[in-house]
Image (cartoon, rainbow over all chains, first blue to last red; front, side):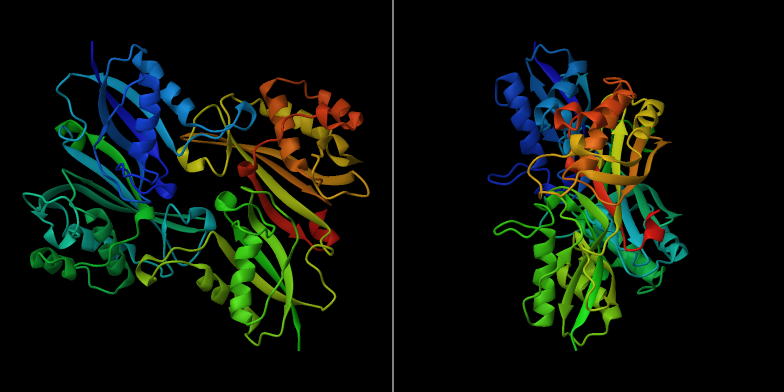
Length: 265
Length: 265
């Protein structure tokens, strides 16, 4: 009896050419499919919810696939993770990709088509306290950001609107550029080495590079390069050139995928 | 007038084949020498204090070199760091190697020969809460460690002793295997995702792989594979086979190098 399985996946995207399988390069999808195909003894293809770019991370990516495999589903994550890990017991190193959960779904379920929304966090370290150990996980910038200005600017991005100004060219064509942002919060915390600024964003869908362009635009508001209120006219322009720069991929992490409206709102 | 310059260096060792320059592979020394030679317009060779292995990190590595360069010394770190960084202003990514300080020293000073001691931290995550974002920076182990047992075992390693049992073969030959450990502390702290256990070790010198073999042995005491008191007989054996496994490189970080007895003790 064929099962439809939904995986939850965490990965450090630093060393990968993104999620989507491409010949000759290391991709997250390729890495998981290779292990699953070996385990199942047949060619497995997985459908990921989000085709994250090179260098982008995930704590809560989802992907579904179908298999006849008899292995009890609760054992699947451990088996696959061990197949992807390297080294011996005494110097065991986990893989940069990790299956954190697996559950069975009805046969019609699809990880991407059934998703109703997603949450991303974009992570920044400001004030020029550059840290080599954070280089792949934070957008590190010299200036100290004005958090209040970033919050004011973010206000104009909440709710339902046309995000055409925040869409990069080169992505999958979309029927509409209208999206709903259910949550957009700027959080900051100091530690002894500097300050972390996080942009938490939750929406029903995101255009190509939309979160990174929002992050870049909010950074420009935080720097004082643009007035917070200017973001209102950026929305109205429906033109990529009106928005700020595309913040680099390594600050971005897909945190959660939602399959019910209650979780999203 | 030739200046003798001492650098303080931080690096994420994950992508490097260690500190020491070798043809055809990426090394920390090679990376710094390449930038310094370009800047100075002459071939620069640096003397590092510690030849850290592939995958080992540093927050406080030191290296010295001589140059006629006229650049004010306080500007040197910024200039070299900019030369090693990648990307444009809008998506600036710092290099995995970073000069954090530069100071002028008397002409006879040597970064390695004048060092009187070093501090390392070996970082562990226990209890099987594997985290992809920590894979290159922590020794992640399944078992929950007994911290008290690790502290008891560490007691037998403090002070002056013959550490021959904790020396791997393959390193530079040494006149003596006697070393003094001035500090050896086990620290642990919980966070919402699990527990970090750190081994802080400060000594006048370390044999080849000594910190990693000490870490592996203390992990075995923490797991209950050996009794804490067994470490006393490991010291007495003067035989590598008596000690525990060599903990993997990615948990290790060179934190500080000392040039005065006061700092060390």
